[in-house]
Image 1: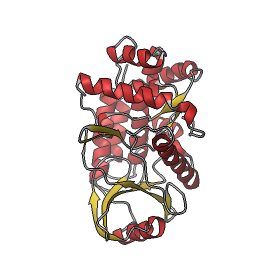
Image 2 (image 1 turned 30 degrees about the horizontal axis):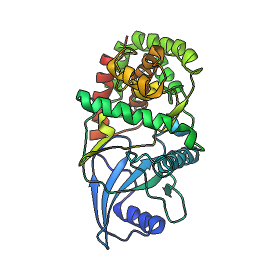
Image 3 (image 1 turned 60 degrees about the vertical axis):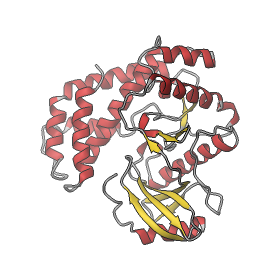
Image 4 (image 1 turned 180 degrees about the horizontal axis):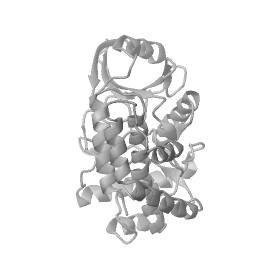
Length: 328
Protein backbone atom coordinates (compact mmCIF):
# COMPACT_ATOMS: atom_id res chain seq x y z
CA UNK A 1 0.00 0.00 0.00
CA UNK A 2 1.42 3.37 -1.04
CA UNK A 3 -1.05 5.53 0.92
CA UNK A 4 -1.19 5.46 4.71
CA UNK A 5 -4.30 4.54 6.71
CA UNK A 6 -6.62 7.48 7.29
CA UNK A 7 -6.64 8.66 10.88
CA UNK A 8 -3.68 6.54 12.02
CA UNK A 9 -0.41 8.27 12.82
CA UNK A 10 2.87 6.83 13.98
CA UNK A 11 2.12 7.94 17.54
CA UNK A 12 -1.08 5.86 17.46
CA UNK A 13 0.88 2.84 16.27
CA UNK A 14 3.59 3.29 18.88
CA UNK A 15 0.97 3.54 21.64
CA UNK A 16 -0.65 0.32 20.43
CA UNK A 17 2.71 -1.48 20.31
CA UNK A 18 3.55 -0.33 23.84
CA UNK A 19 0.16 -1.32 25.26
CA UNK A 20 -0.16 -4.59 23.37
CA UNK A 21 3.39 -5.92 23.22
CA UNK A 22 5.45 -3.72 25.57
CA UNK A 23 7.47 -2.59 22.56
CA UNK A 24 9.22 0.70 23.34
CA UNK A 25 9.47 2.07 19.80
CA UNK A 26 12.59 4.12 19.15
CA UNK A 27 12.46 4.20 15.34
CA UNK A 28 9.43 3.73 13.08
CA UNK A 29 9.60 3.64 9.28
CA UNK A 30 6.63 3.18 6.97
CA UNK A 31 7.15 0.38 4.43
CA UNK A 32 5.03 0.88 1.28
CA UNK A 33 5.02 -2.82 0.32
CA UNK A 34 2.40 -5.43 -0.42
CA UNK A 35 -1.29 -4.88 -0.90
CA UNK A 36 -4.30 -4.88 1.40
CA UNK A 37 -2.43 -3.96 4.61
CA UNK A 38 -0.23 -1.15 5.91
CA UNK A 39 3.25 -1.96 7.21
CA UNK A 40 5.94 -0.38 9.39
CA UNK A 41 9.43 -1.50 10.33
CA UNK A 42 9.90 -0.77 14.03
CA UNK A 43 13.07 -0.59 16.07
CA UNK A 44 12.83 -0.75 19.85
CA UNK A 45 14.97 0.75 22.61
CA UNK A 46 16.66 -2.59 23.26
CA UNK A 47 17.85 -2.95 19.67
CA UNK A 48 15.14 -5.36 18.53
CA UNK A 49 13.31 -5.01 15.21
CA UNK A 50 9.70 -5.77 14.40
CA UNK A 51 7.37 -5.74 11.43
CA UNK A 52 4.05 -4.15 12.38
CA UNK A 53 0.97 -4.55 10.19
CA UNK A 54 -2.19 -2.44 10.39
CA UNK A 55 -5.29 -3.87 8.70
CA UNK A 56 -8.32 -1.86 7.65
CA UNK A 57 -11.33 -3.78 8.96
CA UNK A 58 -13.52 -2.35 6.19
CA UNK A 59 -11.35 -3.90 3.47
CA UNK A 60 -11.29 -7.60 4.37
CA UNK A 61 -14.77 -8.76 3.44
CA UNK A 62 -13.76 -12.43 3.24
CA UNK A 63 -13.31 -12.38 7.05
CA UNK A 64 -16.75 -11.03 7.92
CA UNK A 65 -19.43 -8.48 7.13
CA UNK A 66 -18.90 -6.14 10.12
CA UNK A 67 -15.78 -4.62 11.66
CA UNK A 68 -16.11 -6.78 14.76
CA UNK A 69 -16.55 -9.93 12.66
CA UNK A 70 -13.51 -9.06 10.53
CA UNK A 71 -11.43 -8.37 13.64
CA UNK A 72 -12.43 -11.74 15.06
CA UNK A 73 -11.73 -13.50 11.77
CA UNK A 74 -8.33 -11.83 11.47
CA UNK A 75 -7.41 -12.87 15.02
CA UNK A 76 -8.45 -16.47 14.28
CA UNK A 77 -6.36 -16.53 11.10
CA UNK A 78 -3.29 -15.22 12.93
CA UNK A 79 -3.80 -17.73 15.76
CA UNK A 80 -3.96 -20.49 13.15
CA UNK A 81 -0.61 -19.33 11.74
CA UNK A 82 0.90 -19.47 15.24
CA UNK A 83 -0.45 -23.00 15.71
CA UNK A 84 0.93 -24.11 12.35
CA UNK A 85 4.41 -22.98 13.34
CA UNK A 86 4.44 -23.94 17.01
CA UNK A 87 2.17 -27.00 17.19
CA UNK A 88 2.51 -28.46 13.69
CA UNK A 89 6.21 -27.57 13.51
CA UNK A 90 6.05 -25.84 10.10
CA UNK A 91 9.19 -23.70 10.22
CA UNK A 92 8.33 -21.99 6.90
CA UNK A 93 5.28 -20.28 8.46
CA UNK A 94 6.13 -16.70 9.39
CA UNK A 95 3.69 -16.32 12.28
CA UNK A 96 2.94 -13.26 14.41
CA UNK A 97 4.09 -12.52 17.94
CA UNK A 98 1.30 -12.90 20.48
CA UNK A 99 0.41 -9.78 22.47
CA UNK A 100 0.93 -9.77 26.23
CA UNK A 101 -2.77 -10.58 26.78
CA UNK A 102 -2.43 -13.73 24.66
CA UNK A 103 -4.18 -12.27 21.60
CA UNK A 104 -2.75 -12.41 18.09
CA UNK A 105 -4.07 -8.97 17.14
CA UNK A 106 -4.95 -5.74 18.95
CA UNK A 107 -7.63 -3.28 17.86
CA UNK A 108 -6.49 0.21 16.92
CA UNK A 109 -9.58 2.40 17.20
CA UNK A 110 -12.75 1.04 15.64
CA UNK A 111 -11.55 0.63 12.05
CA UNK A 112 -8.15 -1.03 12.35
CA UNK A 113 -6.26 -3.92 13.94
CA UNK A 114 -2.52 -4.33 14.59
CA UNK A 115 -0.44 -7.49 14.22
CA UNK A 116 3.27 -7.75 15.06
CA UNK A 117 5.78 -10.08 13.43
CA UNK A 118 9.46 -10.66 14.13
CA UNK A 119 11.46 -8.66 11.60
CA UNK A 120 12.91 -11.11 9.07
CA UNK A 121 15.57 -9.79 6.67
CA UNK A 122 15.09 -11.14 3.18
CA UNK A 123 13.58 -10.44 -0.20
CA UNK A 124 10.00 -11.21 -1.17
CA UNK A 125 9.11 -12.19 -4.70
CA UNK A 126 6.87 -10.17 -7.00
CA UNK A 127 3.25 -10.94 -7.67
CA UNK A 128 2.93 -12.39 -11.16
CA UNK A 129 6.54 -13.50 -11.56
CA UNK A 130 7.26 -16.98 -12.88
CA UNK A 131 9.05 -19.17 -10.36
CA UNK A 132 11.92 -21.36 -11.63
CA UNK A 133 11.08 -25.10 -11.69
CA UNK A 134 13.11 -25.87 -8.55
CA UNK A 135 11.29 -23.17 -6.57
CA UNK A 136 7.93 -24.37 -7.86
CA UNK A 137 8.75 -27.87 -6.68
CA UNK A 138 9.79 -26.52 -3.27
CA UNK A 139 6.52 -24.59 -2.99
CA UNK A 140 4.55 -27.74 -3.83
CA UNK A 141 6.41 -29.54 -1.02
CA UNK A 142 5.56 -26.70 1.39
CA UNK A 143 1.89 -26.84 0.42
CA UNK A 144 1.81 -30.61 0.81
CA UNK A 145 3.26 -30.25 4.32
CA UNK A 146 0.77 -27.49 5.16
CA UNK A 147 -2.20 -29.54 3.98
CA UNK A 148 -0.95 -32.61 5.85
CA UNK A 149 -0.93 -30.59 9.09
CA UNK A 150 -4.73 -30.24 9.04
CA UNK A 151 -5.44 -32.92 11.72
CA UNK A 152 -3.00 -31.23 14.12
CA UNK A 153 -4.79 -27.87 14.20
CA UNK A 154 -7.82 -27.77 16.48
CA UNK A 155 -9.53 -24.73 14.99
CA UNK A 156 -9.25 -22.89 11.72
CA UNK A 157 -11.61 -20.63 9.81
CA UNK A 158 -13.61 -22.23 7.00
CA UNK A 159 -13.20 -20.70 3.56
CA UNK A 160 -16.40 -19.54 1.90
CA UNK A 161 -16.36 -20.23 -1.83
CA UNK A 162 -18.76 -17.35 -2.45
CA UNK A 163 -17.34 -14.03 -3.62
CA UNK A 164 -16.83 -11.62 -0.73
CA UNK A 165 -18.49 -8.62 -2.42
CA UNK A 166 -20.77 -10.31 -4.93
CA UNK A 167 -23.87 -8.26 -4.09
CA UNK A 168 -21.92 -5.02 -4.58
CA UNK A 169 -20.53 -6.31 -7.87
CA UNK A 170 -23.95 -7.33 -9.18
CA UNK A 171 -25.32 -3.93 -8.14
CA UNK A 172 -22.51 -2.29 -10.13
CA UNK A 173 -23.41 -4.35 -13.20
CA UNK A 174 -27.04 -3.30 -12.82
CA UNK A 175 -26.08 0.38 -12.65
CA UNK A 176 -23.75 0.59 -15.64
CA UNK A 177 -26.26 2.79 -17.41
CA UNK A 178 -26.02 5.52 -14.76
CA UNK A 179 -23.06 7.76 -13.88
CA UNK A 180 -20.82 6.77 -10.97
CA UNK A 181 -19.78 9.74 -8.84
CA UNK A 182 -17.63 8.27 -6.07
CA UNK A 183 -14.46 10.00 -7.24
CA UNK A 184 -12.18 10.81 -10.18
CA UNK A 185 -11.78 7.17 -11.25
CA UNK A 186 -15.43 6.10 -10.91
CA UNK A 187 -16.42 6.90 -14.49
CA UNK A 188 -13.30 5.32 -16.06
CA UNK A 189 -14.04 2.21 -13.99
CA UNK A 190 -17.65 2.17 -15.19
CA UNK A 191 -16.47 2.42 -18.81
CA UNK A 192 -14.10 -0.51 -18.32
CA UNK A 193 -16.74 -2.69 -16.74
CA UNK A 194 -19.32 -1.70 -19.34
CA UNK A 195 -17.01 -2.94 -22.09
CA UNK A 196 -16.67 -6.30 -20.30
CA UNK A 197 -20.18 -6.63 -18.84
CA UNK A 198 -21.18 -9.63 -20.94
CA UNK A 199 -17.95 -11.44 -20.08
CA UNK A 200 -18.44 -10.71 -16.37
CA UNK A 201 -21.94 -12.16 -16.37
CA UNK A 202 -20.77 -15.31 -18.17
CA UNK A 203 -17.92 -15.75 -15.69
CA UNK A 204 -20.31 -15.42 -12.74
CA UNK A 205 -22.56 -18.11 -14.21
CA UNK A 206 -19.57 -20.40 -14.84
CA UNK A 207 -18.33 -19.79 -11.31
CA UNK A 208 -21.69 -20.87 -9.87
CA UNK A 209 -21.66 -24.13 -11.85
CA UNK A 210 -18.15 -25.01 -10.68
CA UNK A 211 -18.82 -24.02 -7.06
CA UNK A 212 -21.58 -26.63 -6.74
CA UNK A 213 -19.05 -29.38 -7.47
CA UNK A 214 -16.14 -28.05 -5.45
CA UNK A 215 -18.02 -27.57 -2.18
CA UNK A 216 -18.21 -31.38 -1.86
CA UNK A 217 -14.40 -31.83 -1.81
CA UNK A 218 -12.62 -32.66 1.45
CA UNK A 219 -11.00 -29.53 2.92
CA UNK A 220 -7.47 -28.99 4.21
CA UNK A 221 -5.79 -26.03 5.85
CA UNK A 222 -4.90 -23.79 2.92
CA UNK A 223 -2.90 -20.58 2.77
CA UNK A 224 -5.06 -19.08 0.03
CA UNK A 225 -2.51 -16.86 -1.71
CA UNK A 226 0.84 -18.71 -2.03
CA UNK A 227 2.02 -16.54 -4.92
CA UNK A 228 5.63 -15.31 -5.26
CA UNK A 229 4.81 -12.03 -3.51
CA UNK A 230 4.08 -14.03 -0.35
CA UNK A 231 7.33 -15.99 -0.50
CA UNK A 232 10.13 -14.42 1.53
CA UNK A 233 13.61 -15.65 0.65
CA UNK A 234 15.64 -15.38 3.84
CA UNK A 235 19.13 -16.77 3.36
CA UNK A 236 18.75 -20.45 2.53
CA UNK A 237 15.15 -20.51 3.76
CA UNK A 238 11.89 -19.69 2.00
CA UNK A 239 9.12 -18.45 4.30
CA UNK A 240 5.42 -18.24 3.52
CA UNK A 241 3.99 -14.93 4.74
CA UNK A 242 0.62 -13.11 4.92
CA UNK A 243 -1.67 -15.60 6.65
CA UNK A 244 -4.86 -13.51 6.83
CA UNK A 245 -6.36 -15.75 4.12
CA UNK A 246 -5.63 -19.09 5.86
CA UNK A 247 -8.73 -21.31 5.91
CA UNK A 248 -10.10 -24.80 5.48
CA UNK A 249 -10.71 -25.34 1.76
CA UNK A 250 -10.01 -27.84 -1.02
CA UNK A 251 -6.24 -28.04 -1.68
CA UNK A 252 -6.74 -26.62 -5.17
CA UNK A 253 -7.28 -23.22 -3.53
CA UNK A 254 -3.49 -23.23 -3.10
CA UNK A 255 -2.47 -25.49 -5.96
CA UNK A 256 -3.79 -23.39 -8.83
CA UNK A 257 -0.97 -20.95 -8.12
CA UNK A 258 1.64 -23.58 -9.02
CA UNK A 259 -0.19 -26.01 -11.29
CA UNK A 260 -1.62 -25.00 -14.65
CA UNK A 261 -3.63 -28.23 -14.89
CA UNK A 262 -4.12 -31.55 -13.14
CA UNK A 263 -1.55 -33.33 -15.31
CA UNK A 264 1.35 -30.93 -14.71
CA UNK A 265 4.61 -31.96 -13.07
CA UNK A 266 3.60 -29.97 -9.99
CA UNK A 267 0.24 -31.75 -9.74
CA UNK A 268 1.95 -35.13 -10.05
CA UNK A 269 4.46 -34.14 -7.35
CA UNK A 270 1.64 -33.12 -5.02
CA UNK A 271 -0.23 -36.39 -5.61
CA UNK A 272 2.94 -38.38 -4.93
CA UNK A 273 3.48 -36.51 -1.65
CA UNK A 274 -0.11 -36.65 -0.40
CA UNK A 275 -1.85 -39.48 -2.25
CA UNK A 276 -4.53 -37.03 -3.33
CA UNK A 277 -5.30 -36.39 -7.00
CA UNK A 278 -5.67 -32.79 -8.13
CA UNK A 279 -9.18 -31.91 -9.30
CA UNK A 280 -9.15 -29.97 -12.61
CA UNK A 281 -12.57 -28.36 -11.99
CA UNK A 282 -11.38 -27.06 -8.62
CA UNK A 283 -8.23 -25.60 -10.19
CA UNK A 284 -10.39 -23.73 -12.68
CA UNK A 285 -12.81 -22.57 -10.00
CA UNK A 286 -10.13 -20.96 -7.86
CA UNK A 287 -8.39 -19.39 -10.84
CA UNK A 288 -11.75 -17.92 -11.87
CA UNK A 289 -12.60 -16.92 -8.30
CA UNK A 290 -9.39 -14.94 -7.97
CA UNK A 291 -10.17 -12.88 -11.06
CA UNK A 292 -13.80 -12.27 -10.06
CA UNK A 293 -12.84 -11.36 -6.50
CA UNK A 294 -10.28 -8.84 -7.74
CA UNK A 295 -12.75 -7.30 -10.19
CA UNK A 296 -15.44 -7.00 -7.52
CA UNK A 297 -13.03 -5.53 -4.95
CA UNK A 298 -11.60 -2.94 -7.35
CA UNK A 299 -15.05 -2.05 -8.65
CA UNK A 300 -16.37 -1.56 -5.13
CA UNK A 301 -13.40 0.63 -4.23
CA UNK A 302 -13.70 2.81 -7.33
CA UNK A 303 -17.47 3.24 -7.03
CA UNK A 304 -17.04 4.38 -3.42
CA UNK A 305 -15.85 7.80 -2.31
CA UNK A 306 -12.18 8.24 -3.18
CA UNK A 307 -9.68 10.89 -4.23
CA UNK A 308 -6.82 10.92 -6.71
CA UNK A 309 -4.29 8.81 -4.81
CA UNK A 310 -1.67 6.30 -5.92
CA UNK A 311 -3.71 3.45 -4.44
CA UNK A 312 -6.82 4.55 -6.37
CA UNK A 313 -4.77 4.81 -9.57
CA UNK A 314 -3.43 1.32 -8.92
CA UNK A 315 -6.98 -0.01 -8.45
CA UNK A 316 -8.01 1.35 -11.84
CA UNK A 317 -4.97 -0.14 -13.60
CA UNK A 318 -5.48 -3.46 -11.84
CA UNK A 319 -9.15 -3.52 -12.83
CA UNK A 320 -8.21 -3.04 -16.47
CA UNK A 321 -5.51 -5.74 -16.36
CA UNK A 322 -7.72 -8.22 -14.54
CA UNK A 323 -10.66 -7.78 -16.89
CA UNK A 324 -8.38 -8.22 -19.88
CA UNK A 325 -6.80 -11.39 -18.50
CA UNK A 326 -9.82 -13.04 -16.86
CA UNK A 327 -10.16 -16.73 -17.83
CA UNK A 328 -12.70 -17.56 -20.53
